[in-house]
Image (cartoon, rainbow, N blue to C red; front, top):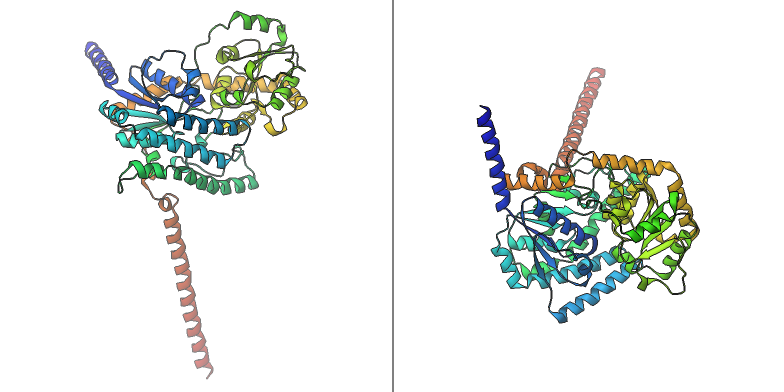
Length: 523
């Protein structure tokens, strides 16, 4: 009996191994920066997990800094003809400069998606790559859910897909989540899960504002859809989002607010964490100079670091000069203003090993832009934060950092040396911030499965079961009036009003009858 059971276990393992070995996964990455890094990490984890991974990569200047290591998976690069590429590069640089100078609003976001839609149209016109992707017969496509173009590529390939959301779950459309506006803040609201009456009013109104803005963003792809899909078979983007078998979210409840999730939503916060390596000796020598005071790590993300203004650099440098800690700052020499003298306790470098420095025993504080990947790394190593959010999800991430008491946020528009110095000193000296950061670290690391195990395990699950139909609630197929029980409400309201009307009529008739009877008796 034991031998038979062991044979069954071995047979099951071999069957799973064969299934995984035969499974071909396509990952799509057309966005740069943190999006590129996230999708590269996801591709690597899936490849290491036994899957046959191919990554579709849009190759342009901005991805060059992140492609120094040779990937373990196959990469299909695509780019535009040189004349077209120059036009798109110019548009891209203008958008990045607009972001870097703090001009990020809904209007800018719409322009970004219009740019992506035009680029998407160019890609869908490259017949040889589209044919190559079709002929590969992928079993599954994993895409960055912020990259709307991926949905159209997947629709063309007619493949099952899995979404990877590199931001907070609140960014998902509310049709994809069991959201309650009474305690789940709308994306961009700046609210926490503990709202007073006026907070709930604000959240309720912003829900409709967010929904309208989402529709405007999706409408930027209408021309691309009309150009590349035949009339009568043109997809609706909001419906395509619902086709995803699974939603992986690059967060967890060490950072996010507790909320109900559908079974096909899986949190994988910390997925980008890598094994810690010893830091270079020159950095170790710099840190040693400051003894028990320790050091502060400053990293404001790739886009922000390229477009920091002279005023911001001057104020930050002046703030760092007032502290006893050493400061390691990711800032390129070419961007440093010549008229600003570098503070004696500050060392600037083009690139710093962020993960390794966050794990260093003498780190006291992380000054960050509040990007999801950076916040996740700080949580992984229990480091308190001072956030200087610039755009997109960064303010929302810092709202959660503050709510969890892991750090403090400073508005870019009001950034001054004295305020920044006092804030950093407060977070370093007040032990509550360090304690909260360590508590979040324990929550993150004590999960029974690692983020990589969750990612590969769930992919394996839907490959073996032929999809995730058993995980999707019927609500995905319901029209909105059914989902929110408006038809039931109107029926019950009508029934109640009809009953009241009938009751009034009956009472009126009875009253008239009794009144008539009295008159007869009196006569």
